[in-house]
Length: 103
Image 1 (cartoon, rainbow, N blue to C red):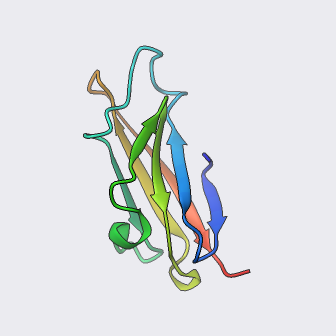
Image 2 (image 1 turned 90 degrees about the vertical axis):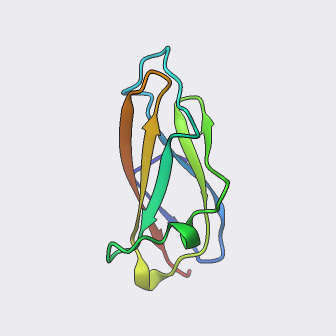
Image 3 (image 1 turned 180 degrees about the vertical axis):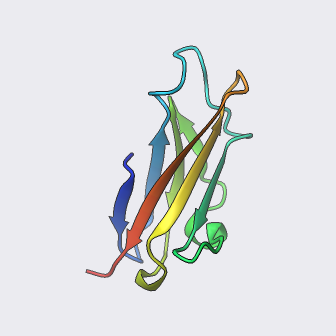
């Protein structure tokens, strides 16, 4: 899943990601250990520990991925920031927004 915005329910947990294909050279690779993914609620409070599943950060091709969980409609939208560092020391950033709502 890669888009600027997505919805989920509080119970749901699944993997999302950001693609860096449009900015990376075909010979570059994302280095998972030096790349980062963080999450903030609508007030700018860091909620990475409660929204992002610890240890789930991964790379698939030109995509940096993370598993999301929990959240509340009251704190939505959440901003998920992907900071990719490549094997050539290039640094790229993508923001994605997650809306949590009970249906």
